[in-house]
Length: 189
Image (cartoon, rainbow, N blue to C red):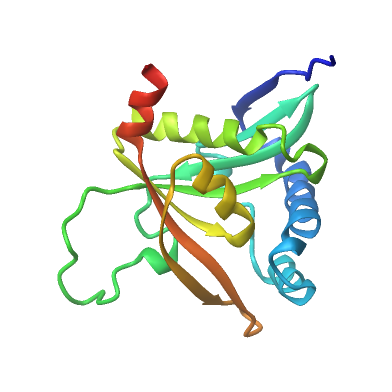
């Protein structure tokens, strides 16, 4: 029986950016092809900035290391407007009062490390940090590829969303939500 090397989670650093950009592209091309067309992936690669420099420098974006190699990344934000689809539809009218949710963002796993608990470990780190910061819920605008992981770790699908990219390509995502208080209670048990 072989023993897998441990997964080490640490905050991402600006110096990780070149490796993270490569990881994001590899993840899109290696894993996204099961849920998106090649044309859709090409559009994502050309028109979506998957690595937000502000998030990278916030201390809320993490990398998972396996034997010293960056195997995945992901993080969270407290910005209520980070996902355009989650903005109030009537920006001029009153905004419904609701407890803010942490926004889980930019989760990518290297195709080399799929099914090794990388995504789950990074998500657990991000959720724990968001909960410690006072958030009771987390939301994610999940790619179709990420939906399966999110469902396995307790996220509920709220609605399917179609978003246009700069070239007119329409991409499908799923807006999902999870109670962090319930997740925190399960970890403590």
